[in-house]
Length: 460
Image (tube, rainbow, N blue to C red; front, side, top):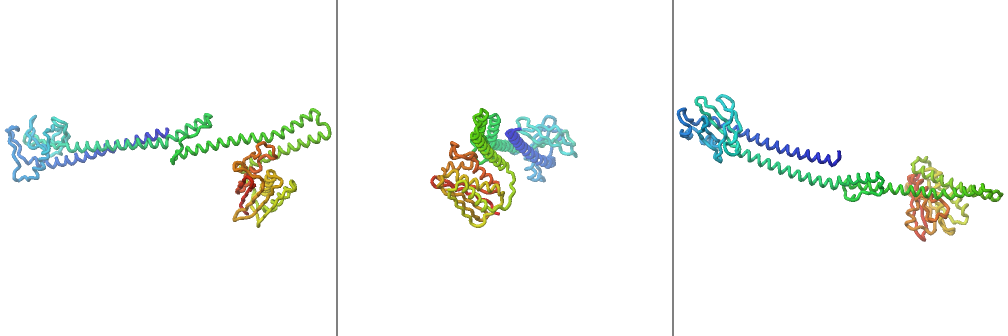
């Protein structure tokens, strides 16, 4: 069952309850009025019996009507004047009183007759002409063949009931209008975005990955859901794009050493590398390509382990010896490079020593690789609060803001021609290791002002 159908059923149930309440209200009012009129009829019946009735040898139509005697109070007459009272004999009736506000209508005779000493039977009857209704009792005389008809008009009751019905109908129409407006409002702001999200999901399942939910504005839950769906789809598409780029970059990096190895082995099979020097050079080239492939595979495996969130065995690690070792290794690689180390206080963190050593080595190697030989490198380490900060600063040419924003992407290098050495995974590995240590790494660079990479780690 759809949500829209559920709302329709709820609206129909609400309208049914309103209609039922209207019917019960009208019925309750009518029942209360009937009880009051019936009580008045039963009370007035003895008073009516106090008037003289025509004798048996008199004709009802010619018998004069006697007014109330002096023993009867005016209040009794006033009460009686609210009713229609007639003496009935056969098909003829002698009218004694008619209601003061009557309109000339005459009640019909009720089917039930009340005998003396028995409970009064009150019936609802119509008029001999017209649509007016009456509550009436027909009392049999114990000594004469006549009957006494006492009736009260239901015109006021029917008018009140009609007004109540109109009021209930108006209330129902108002509720119906409110439900229509609410349904339109809920359907436009709530159900329509959800239906559009469903359509987009079906389209994406069918293969159209470019579909998005349009009109996802507003502050409703449905609009928030639509925006979340769009963000999720954009992130999924971006992840797929990064994955395809990653596969392309990894294939490109592996293709060069594989081509070297295949080319050298083909030359060897053809007998072109049988001589001693040629054979040694071929083996050297194969070894270089193999080491390059091995290093790339190790870096990829390390990134995969970091992505999987594999736990790290934390221990207290002093960074100062690691920084000194990194400078010694860099000096052995580039003896003419000017590298400065500045350490303030104790720089001890909780982490994995081998992983932290790789972070420092990657940062120093990255500065050596991407700066000219006359550029200086400064390494600063200090503790501030509960964080240990390591800055690697070089005076190289720096990067543009766009290049700096991509520096931690995998396989990204500022030199798009890929003629520089390296795989473009150094800073990506740094970011992954630092994140695994619950730290942060940032890069600040600009043309003609060098590059600064800042690593902050929780102190021990």
